[in-house]
Amino acid sequence: MIKPLLSFITLLLAANSYAQIYLNPGVDTSLVEVKQALRFYNKYVAGFNGKNIPDMAKYWPQSEVKLRKVPDQLIYAINDYPLYSMGCQLTILYIRPTANYVHIKTQFSVPDSLKNVMTMAIANYYVAFDKNHQPYFKNPLTTQLGGWRSRAMRNITYYYPTYHTFNAKRADSLITSVARLEKEWGLTPINIRYYLANNKDELYKLQGFDYTVMMGNKEAPSGKSDDKDNQVFCGGLGENYFHEVVHLYLNHLYPKSPLQEGLAVFYAGSMGHTVKWHLKTVNEYLNKHPETDLTDLDNFWYTDPFTNPGSAIQGMLCSMIFKKDGIAGLKRLMQYNSYKEIFKKEFNIDTAQINAFLKKSIADESVN
Ligand SMILES: [Zn+2]
Image (cartoon, rainbow, N blue to C red; front, side, top):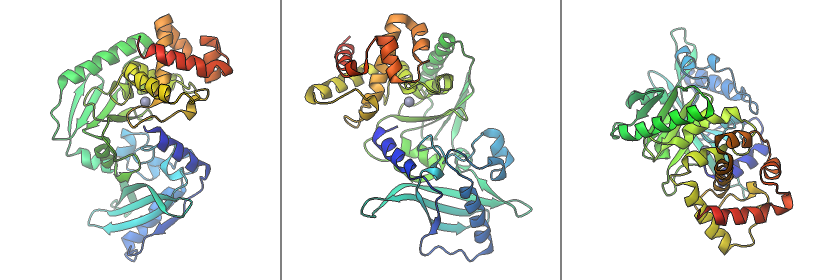
């Protein structure tokens, strides 16, 4: 995921409050079924409070709740914090009642300092009614997957669009990496749903979005893991997006480690490139910008559209420990809850020395 946007989203969280739902001009709410669908949607939205989300079983059919803890694929698609709690203004742009459901299209936006609208997402909800006229949400993911293909390999079920020719060789490579990872960390196989497409925009549409702030720009491989329901959404690397699968296996073991992303980068690179590739570009950037201060790694998140310097440095720290102490070293490294502890206990570096230490390490590790 792209760090500048995440920082922006974090800013939004600070302004988190219950969002009033507005109606765009032209939206007709006079029909009874539209009124009923809107009441249902409003109640659902009101059920979000910070990290707390409404009881999914009250809004989604049993078949959906059985498949996933969180049937609503829009809640965590952009961030690990619920979309409805990000402090956005909600505007219903469009309502279309059909024979089978009422389609509601909502814009999530925030005003900038000049009150211009900045749109974070445009999302679709489909409210249907059961035989007792009780409303429930239909899942756009389930509906659209009806037109996709699927293939199960070991513990991974792949879902892919019809234009895609399944590449069993790439799937085999992923399975081999997964089996090795399980062995190294003493873990049993996790059943994973793996959705793949040519790019991330298609995957956001599969989930039910028309638009998210993460879409567009020059294409680069991009993925998202969902460890609540053991799913990965992978655009651009076909059947072998190991990075996101690593997150599913290892994130929950070390929920407080600042190196969760680094561990996935260590194993599988990032955005289609290895740790070393990223370190080379970071090193070139640092040579051109010697004033850059790496003391607070969270503040170093952008060099160019294809590199995530923070993740690359995290991956480098994992790689350095692995070279020294193998998997046992990585298991030890992941136990720490802060960078300060990691630098002190693993590298014997105080805060004042972090900047120089990292710059030297980046220069060394980008060539070795
Ligand atoms: Zn990651």
